[in-house]
Image (cartoon, rainbow, N blue to C red; front, top):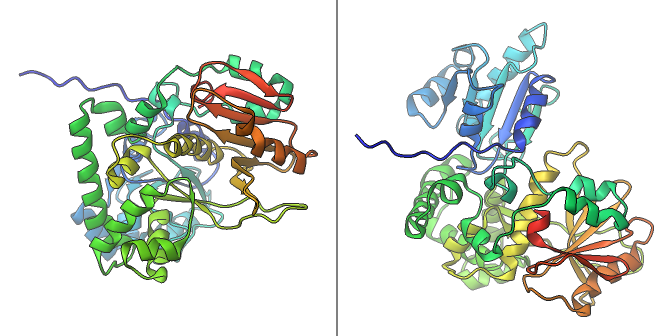
Length: 414
């Protein structure tokens, strides 16, 4: 018998955060999109590898959990309970078990879920004071290359603008075509295990079908799966654009309230990302509508029926890296965008209490002075909080295009 060669399990940046959380709180909750790698992480992370794993995707296990949650959580010590959004009342049993433990033993339960439990309407128990939440995004580019990391955003924020080139030299990323990276996306199966492009397309098709037929029933009833599928495609075509719900509804023939509800579902299930605007302006009137992105560029291309990635897909790659970093960083910085009514804009702004980091993304291999106009306007507006801006592009050189803007290849940073 010929054995299939299985690629190695790649380390995840979230692993260290989970291991820290296991030492602090009775419950660790790992959330992220379906197929982002939660189960693999739970079964291979050294701190979790020997724990019994119970997935509520299993009908018999879910029936037991729904019938007698308190007995279910006692099936084995230190369990990992997967896809807990499929049995929301189980969280009440977990809470009771924690409260009955006089020692409040750290790491009593590990829960995983493909929906944001804090935003689900059916979930009444937040496990406040008992749980640490860790978000697992699809692979960052450095995770896909085996580094188990995100870009060096913390180091850039900690260093003065003049030292940014040294920071990038200390954390070099492997060179890669951004369009190839966008096609691969970050879901472990198509990005790491499936080399054939047609097979990756089939995987995405099955992913969407599973999401529509199974996950939506857990999150909330959707009266028309066809309408929902059309909205997914239309939203994928609008990556990087300001979100206009009324216009989106007109384009696909559904009402604005339906669009709003469908987008909420996509966001709760970690499919779509609505990026808010940076609003602490001093003199300029800013645009307040969110910008729309997707959790995974490969899935977005499939949903939109696009074969060639656009510059917005490179933006999306950078954003997912920023979000993965944000959700693993103590103090949880904000990731936003900046745009004025007159059209000046910056793709992303990282906000911490003491510093702002403005980031512009250009897919082209050449940069002109006009490409940095938004960064320069932002730096003029917030001189006390931002001493420099970063422009990521499709070229190979790293250099200062102005006294306050560093140009760097996108692959050197994420």
